[in-house]
Image 1 (cartoon, helix red, strand yellow):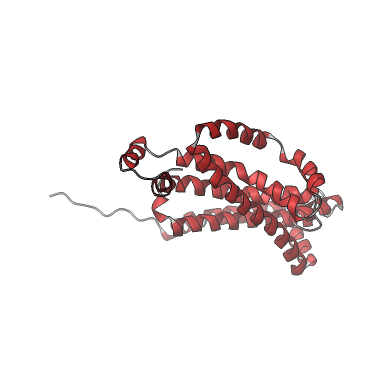
Image 2 (image 1 turned 180 degrees about the horizontal axis):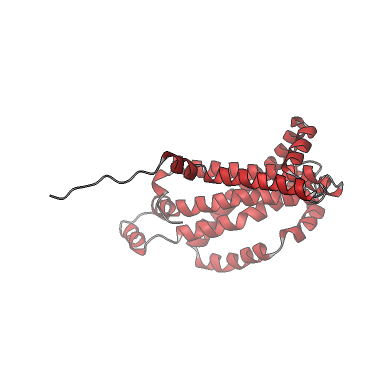
Length: 265
């Protein structure tokens, strides 16, 4: 008679280490960083210790930090929303017309290949100071992955399904919303997760060029004033904002389209 033996279970400590491995590595890096700065006597204007970064951040006060974070998030989210509003209809238009695809795609590649850092001062001079040029710069940076990935997802539908819908005399709009868009969902959300982090990058680049507040402006001002710990604190906040926004898009994907989680993107 065949005996079935139970699978060996991992010790509780091993399971705990695996679950919190990233946090433990992060804490170990912070500890090594702090010890290295103290033992090697590295000047704070070159590479400040984590404790000094925390102290400098606390000295600025919560209100000032909220002003800078709010300014950066405002630009990033408006530019991100505008990129979505432009990219998805354009991706649908590209997949519907080969002629349009041949006309538009080279221009999209040109825009993506152009360094936005070099173009940003021209955009500011053309559009003037204020919110508009920063939003435009952010939109340009976040726009390209959305268009390409959405178009790729819309084009990934098996030809048999397309032919079947045509044989059933389905309208073009119905074909897109009921066949192509479900196939494109994993591709769209993959692009959305990439673009939300690029939107933060775009907002920072825009603040380097023309801004009076924001985390990008704060980094530029702090480094020019040799307040490097403040710049590191602003950089840490930027990373935290990117991670939270990325996680928010990921959770939105899981809640709205759980069936598409296993589909390769």
